[in-house]
Amino acid sequence: MRLHELIQLNEVSAFQERKLQETDWKHPREVRRWLESKGFQKKGIGSFAHAYIHPRYKRIVKISKRQDVCWLRFAYWTLKMTANPSVPYIDWIRVYGQDDKFFIAVVEKLAPYNRTAVMNTIDLPGLAYLYINETWFMSDVDIEDRFIKEGILDAKAKYSDVDEEDEYIVRKLKRYLKSAKGGKRFINALRAAEKRATGLCSYDMHEDNLMYRPSDRRLVVIDPLADLSEIGGGFTV
Image 1 (cartoon, rainbow, N blue to C red):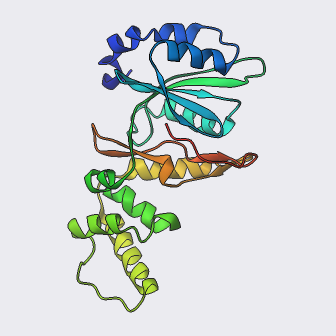
Image 2: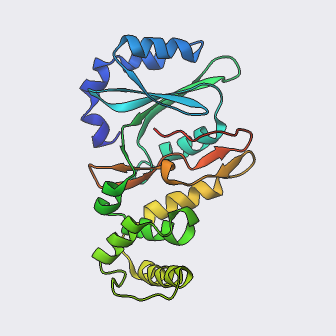
Image 3: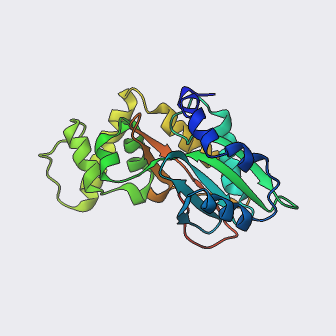
């Protein structure tokens, strides 16, 4: 058990987490009603799940509406990676219902990935790796500003066109990554997720699947696999 978890034991018992975990819930609707009776509020809705938060509870309760083998695949892997700060801290997961129809997971509460995360994170190698490998991540002014601030990019560089600018940035970031210290666990988390993208599960990395942990200033990979049998929006915890 992590120190992060030990500190919150009293808080957890105050919200009857044992009852939440041990009750043999038959339907997600039962769980949602019980949480709402305890003062939890619905935070987000996705193709597969609901998220519930409480203002005095530093975790999120995630309730799937049906099976989500791809998120479970990632979640079960994170439970083994207790020393990796680049994946969410998950207290427990339990599958309920006949034929494993749905699950409940208690997950740490994280902050959105936004400009604050970009400018404050210590995971500069993680930002560089994403910039190089993810097309959706390129040409983000906030990220480029951070690289310039850290002296990784030259603010005075001149480009004849966008393609030349992108080539320059990627070249500089690749050179930076070769000597950069730290960030390996974040990069390893992304690579591990890609390896688990088999069968119905595809690798699905985008900004909604990144969050930020203010306590240690880390980027956190939360939901990197998508079910190919479903078409719909992503879900963030």
